[in-house]
Amino acid sequence: TAHVRLPRTIAPDDTARHAFLVDVIDGLSADPKRIPPKYFYDERGSQLFEAITRTPEYYPTRTETGILTAEAGAIAAFVPKDAALVEFGAGSLTKVRLLLGAAPVKTFVPVDISSAFLQDAAQRLSREIPGLRVVPVPADFTAPFALPAEIAALPKVGFFPGSTLGNFEPHEAAAFLRHAGALLGPGARMIIGVDLVKDPDVLTRAYNDAAGVTAEFNLNLLRRINRELGGNFDLGAFWHRAVYNREQLRIEMHLASRTRQRVRVDGRCFEFRRGETIHTESSYKYTAELFRTLATGAGWRLAETWTDPERWFAVHALVR
Ligand code: AVJ
Image (cartoon, rainbow, N blue to C red; front, side, top):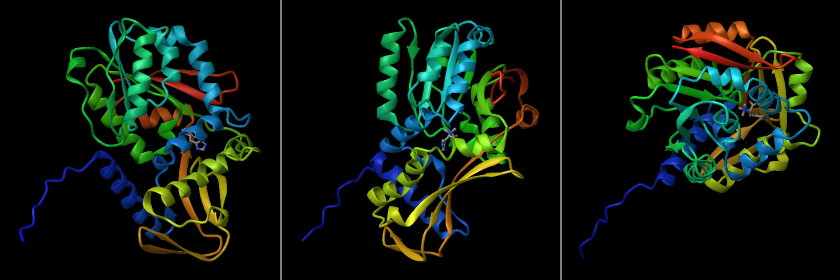
C-alpha cells in the first residue's frame, strides 16, 4: 500500500519547545551546569516575577518606576516629536505608560517573545491612548529581527527598562547595544534602565526575599522543564541560592542539589553531585562609569543619567 506523506508545517510552539530543549540539554551537559534566564518566564514564572517586584526587598522595579515618574518631563524632552518608541521585551507595558503619558510618541512598537500576551496588552493600550498607533512585533529580541516598514521614516527611540540588560554577559550586553543601534538607525536614541552597584547586603536581600517568592521563581524553572520537556526533577531535592559575586559585580542565582542524584529530561540522564548547582541567572550591576564605557564601546554616547536619591538605580539616555 502507498504511504501518503502529509506536508507538515512546524508550529511556532514546536520551534520554541525545541529551542528550550536544546538549551536545557546543552546547559545540563556543561560543567558548571547552566540554563539561560529567559526560560523563567512561562505564565507562572511571569506571575512570580510580578510578585517579586511587590516584595519589600526587591527595590529595582519600584525605584525605576519612581525615577520614570519623577523625571517624566526631562525624559520626555529627550524624545523627538512624532517618534516611534520601540520597547525591547515589552511584557506587561506598565512602565512605558509613564513615558507615553509625557512624551510626544506617535507610534509604539512593543517587541516581546510571548505573542498572545503581547497582542492583548497592545490592544488595551491603543484603546487607552487614542491617537497612538501600536504595532506589536512578536520576536525574541536577543536574536535578529526586523522593525515594521511603516516606521522606517520616523525618528526612533529604544526603550529597555528593568535592568534586563544585566541578564546578559558584558560582551553580550555590548553586542545587544550595538545591534539595537543598527536596528534603530542613525540619529536614534535609547532610554535604558540599569541597576547600580551598591551595598552587597541590599543586593543579596533583594534576591533572597523572606517570603521565598524568588526561591519559588527559581524552582519554577524545574517545574517548567518537567511539564514541557518531560523532566522528572524533584523540586524538593533542590534549593534556591543567590549570592553576590563582588569580582564580577553580579548577583548569581543557582539551584543547588541537596543530594547526589540522577535526573532525566526527554529521555536523557544527568548526574548531580551533592551540592552541585545549576547556574540559572546572572544579574550584572553597573556603576554609571562602567555603563558609560559599555555604551561608548557599542557606538552610543551617554547623554544623560537620571537616578533616585539613594542612587540605587539609573535610567540612562543614549544617542547614536
Ligand atoms: C528582570 C532580569 C531584571 O535580574 O533583577 C528578579 C529578574 N531575578 N529576581 C533581575 C530577577 C530574580 C530581574 N530582571
